Image 1 (cartoon, rainbow, N blue to C red):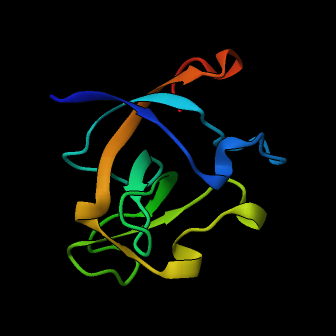
Image 2 (cartoon, rainbow, N blue to C red):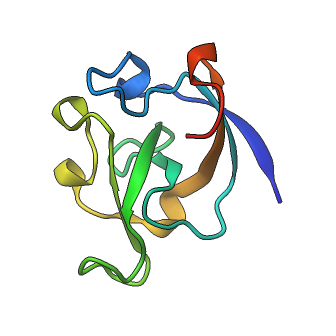
Length: 111
């Protein structure tokens, strides 16, 4: 298992109005398999190198997705750029699955 600390620079860093996923630093593990509900670090399909934290809504093969596609959405629909904007992402774009929130302290624990 590969573990990495991922500093997240995405629109969802600011506190979310809905109380959704709003991470500044999280512990993430290399993603082997992800499923609906998992918080993941995914590369933006139109901005190579730009990583975002999103939640998997549909895994490969589900929700009319191809076998190598994932549908991801942010927890704050009104302020999130996600698959509703750019469509499904390639499963290989999922860099890691978030397993523990490290910062801010009020979010310590699981995503």
